[in-house]
Image (tube, rainbow, N blue to C red; front, side):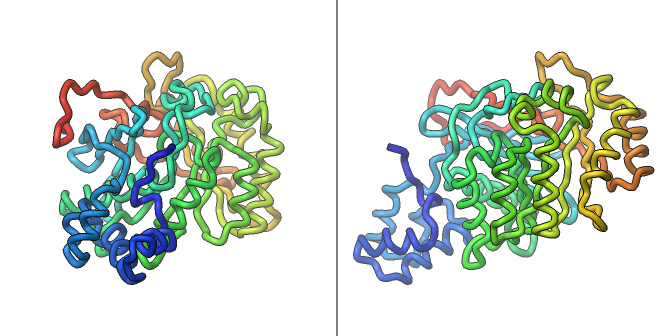
Length: 367
């Protein structure tokens, strides 16, 4: 049976749990505030709760994630955490701090079953889905880390959250959405839905489902090629959901929600970065955009090296030429700012490198 942690419970479930212990309803609200507002890391420190309740809560883990290592890059402004799960699998989470914001990139699965050839996570295969609490706990860690750095904003927590770490969120949709609702809850973590972004390889059923959700979470879609032949070579999921089907779902999503969709496009030297491919991409997006509204945006990502992968990173001149062609065709376009490359924390580099521990340590190793 899967081990549950306190972050696996929403407020209603915590209320029911504590009621079964003979506790009044307001105790659940106090506990919820400790978990999501105060970011209290130990039930023993929840001193406004009775000692007997604190002792009982101590028998339940706040989180099933065990922090083993934090790697630091970009002069301390990018931090990558390695967590071990109870079954031995590992996941990684990245915190990126900027002058005006802080972003956590969290994982939704251990490994990934999508098999994109340019992605380190895809080489692992799917190990398992994360629980909602394991997803939530990563955002909590990032906020706790911010506080420890003295870099937290007015809310004391991260300002942005992207579900772009290990795994495909829509392949773990129910648990991912439970995490979204818990992190959005104004009674707790209170992160706005528009401050969250989910990235998918293009699982059409997930896009259709997201269009009907009540919270306006941002959508990013990994495209990476303007035609089916090349996209199927780079992303096996295209054989199941070819570009025409993917674009139809995306267009319907935009029409229904009136929200902008970002297309992620990893640039690979000599593979998908030719001028004629930029033209083909621009024409595809112009053709598929809902009438009267260009609510598509392209996020160009120079490929981050993955060991053992026979691909190359596009030279900067090719990146800027590709961007200029899209711009000339009226396609909104940006080049993603790189963070964490030297600690393998950038887009496509998360591989959950396991750390062999001879003896358990009380503090994670920092490099």
